[in-house]
Amino acid sequence: MAKTKKRNSFGVMLLKFILILILGIIALSFILPPLFSIIAPFLHALPFDAPRNYIITDYIGMTVLGLASLTLLFFAFKWGFR
Amino acid sequence: MDDKEFLEDQPQDLSRREVLKFSALLGGSTFLQPLSANNTTQEKTDTALITKANILIVGGGDAGITIAARLTKALPQATVTIVEPRETHYYQPGQTLVASGVWKLEEITYETKKFIPKGVTWIKDRVQSFEPDQNSVTLSSNKKLSYDYLVVATGLSLEYQKIKGLTEQDLTQDGISSIYLPSATEQTFESIKQLAEKAKLGKVKALFTQPNTPIKCGGAPKKIMFLAENYLRDQGVRENVEITFLTPGENYFGIDPYEDAVKRQFKKRGLHIAMGHHLESIDITNKTAQFLHSYEIRGEYDKDLEEYDMIQKSEMKTLDFDFIHITPAMKAHDFVKNSPLSWQKGTNKEYGYLDVHEKSLQHKRYANVFGAGDVIGTHFGKTGGSVRKQAPVIVQNIVDALQNRPLSAQFDGYTVCPLITGYGTVMLAEFNYEGVAPSFPLDPKKERWLWWLLKVYALKPMYFYGMLKGRM
Image (tube, rainbow over all chains, first blue to last red; front, side, top):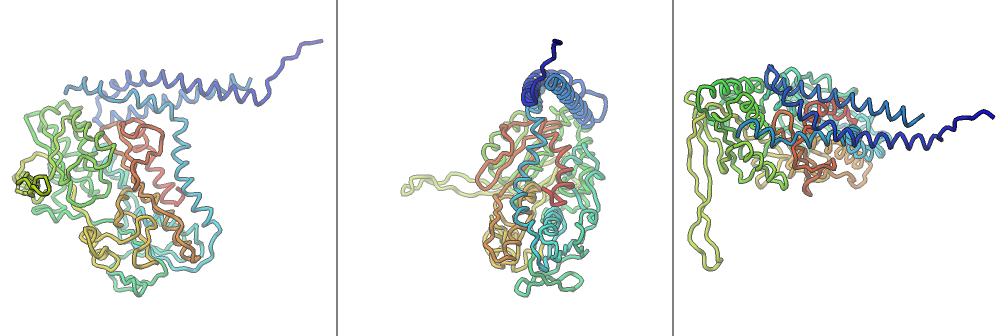
């Protein structure tokens, strides 16, 4: 008899998804703040008008945050629902 | 304090860490509270009460428009009218950001007509007088408007002329600034930049004043001072600028635990505070300001009371400056102050505030009159965030009154002050009649990048697409 691959039930997959998401948020909260604190002073020192430097920093910070969140969601779906 | 030392003192690590922790929750939690508050009103009012009631709203600022939007949903058959003479609507919470160069004035300037809800009649006129005994209002065109229910949301009058030697036109001059007047906000940033240039040549002095009346957005004079200080530090001239905050009061913020947190900000940034000082007059040509300094000294020992008598003293003090930021005294407009609707005794009479119950926002003597926004004489509530909480209360209470039910909604005094402590950091001070009332499970005393994001990027869309549309 040919071996069939056993699939997880939807409940188990959802649980895995949530678990990966929680672990990911914890991991990102350790990785991103030091990264921001290294990069931010460089961005604040950009040769533009003082307030604009902070706005550029905000945009870069939020973009990194958004990309990290999307990456986390991607892997949570990929590994959670397989 | 050098820049490196200051950067180390910044709470950026923690702020960004917590941004991540709560980023997933931010969207949800930001909207949860308003929606839950909203739902209570919406559930009851969605029963679409059929009434032909004539509801008049005096004032088309954020309070007037928000209430009108909610009324049209709750009472679709009612006649709702707004009386508002101004064709320009300013997003007032953004004035500090314009004055610090983050935004341009055009980014907070809108046409009032864009926000008047559908089905609401807008009368472009001023109110001359209220006749609450006849349920009518007289406009400056002498036209009389009658009403079944009246909502007064006229805001406050800025009393720059109370300062001798100052007119509103002076606020566009170099070194004389005020963020409370929209037309002077951009000039304020120019003056801060010019101050930085002067500081490159030698020692200069900057003064920031607070008046002896309650003011809208009470944290704003400190916000602009913190931002100016940040700008001067970035320009490398902070050590050449002596910054003093002059207040008639005897505290930094007045509400625990923010009092200590703000005091720490003053200390950390080397800012001076002069308590018991009120700006009386100004000499623009010579750049000097005269302050009435009131203080107490210890008198003789009273054996019966077993304590020293305290003697009130006051003296005029002249201070020279290179830059001054003026926060004007504020009071209700004369047509409110001189009407039967204002407070008839006590300190609030002097300010001319509308005499409403603190919780129901119903007038104390005229049951069909309600008040919202800066003009009401409640303990707290002179911020846009307060209006967001007042609007559903007023609408629900009007619905209750129409159905002859006891008024069920209550305003808890919610006031929010995103206290900007520098570019990129904000302390979100939230409180109500009971005390501190944080919306998020985070230490409210800490300045965070998260609140800066909220202030600069999230509050404006919430204001225009949520609050003014009556959705939150």
